[in-house]
Length: 335
Ligand code: TRP
Ligand code: SF4
Image (cartoon, rainbow, N blue to C red):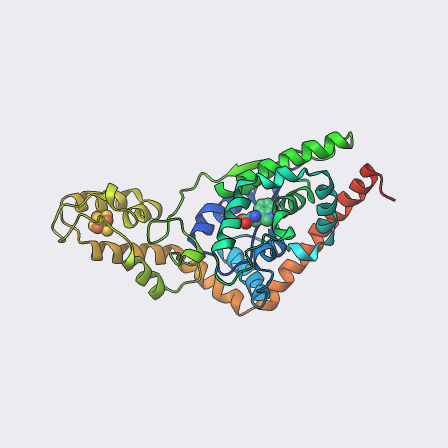
């Protein structure tokens, strides 16, 4: 029998997750967990690469990420959830990979360049790029290779990192004359990209996100702020859904085909005011997240259960990585 393919992915614990995470990554993971052996990591070392001097909330953030995942439907009976920093084998692999990684490979990493730019613009942050941040893509490769994953489901912004991991695997196998590591393939979500309420990329630091954990009132408030067809002054002016930069796009994600058609027709005919339209949209979104938010509340009140889930996941994941690191030590020729 063919072995089950392994999936590995991760997220940095930077706070509560938003709808971009949900639609762009988590929904993909939820589908994959039914077919594959899945490992999902809370990448707290990766969070340290830029926030090493702000660790007060790190533990809480780790918990919140796991709670968001569980609430959304990541099932610990199907997928293995773990915390990166509790698996020392990943750090060991990171060392070996660092040895075989040419410096210019990490320097040309586009995502890293963006992160460095953001870091430079941040107030009060030391604008120096740390050795740890330089090693970001190597550490990510260590994550992926520590379970020898076949596929890595990520958002589009992380694909370059996975490509680098493929280079790294090839180089490692070449240098040590082995075919031990598989070249992992990025898996892009076919799901729609969601923009923030201002029309830009949704992101926590842009203050334009809707959180999975937002309550209904907050969600509605945010939706009421989102941009519509700017050329429209009065509610009986004919509208242009294609120029409605945020609200109609959200309808296309959260509405049924019928909803979308109705909104489109009524908007064009000037039979639909933007405020009413957005109020309805907020309702739709709140309906969509009702169960998820209830589940979230449950886990918030059962933190011990949450901890147990990732502790068990860590144990499982570590077993796999231990075996791989034993093999790696042999392959390289360590004592
Ligand atoms: N760098 C990823 C992000 O910021 C998170 C991550 C860490 C990851 N390790 C990973 C993703 C391994 C996929 C595989 O979103
Ligand atoms: Fe957008 Fe709805 Fe206003 Fe039309 S009515 S412009 S779809 S918010």
